[in-house]
Image (cartoon, rainbow, N blue to C red; front, side, top):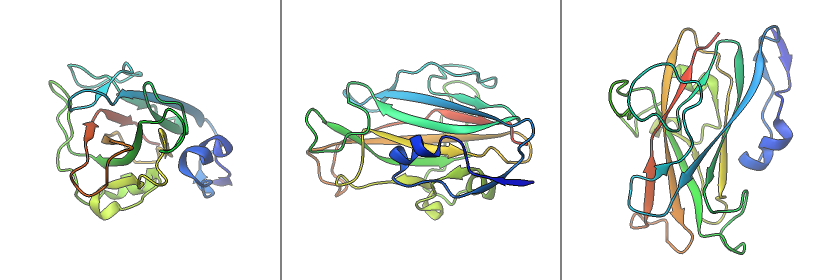
Length: 199
């Protein structure tokens, strides 16, 4: 093992409001990749995913928003909102929606319209080892922000160091800027999947 500073740190610090810590990664044969998934926040829930699948190999049905990290890959995922300017906050001109939460689970159905289950439960150790940030792993939350600091784009880093193939379903919550985060705000959600082939 060699200790390296993760590529893409400067760019992703904009997404995650801070730089990544150093991580132990195999330098040999590791390829940095990046994905972007866009959502359409307007309209009735569930929020529509508008980015086609990226190299997903398992499951059937509509897999928009699904992406695969092969066993020699690690990298970043940027989530954006269609019609919104990247990296803007509520109060910036033209900003109507922001991403306020990214949740995760490794429980789901690979047949039919792939959807995750058991939301709000503690994250498994392989998820905590591979993904950053981890804002509230006990409640299954990778990223959470208030309307004061949420942006129109949010991101995750995936070290993809799990042992063997794993699937992570993610749920994106977008909130209107004129709403209060008190449980009655209008939230649209979408839950596609990440395929991690691991080391």
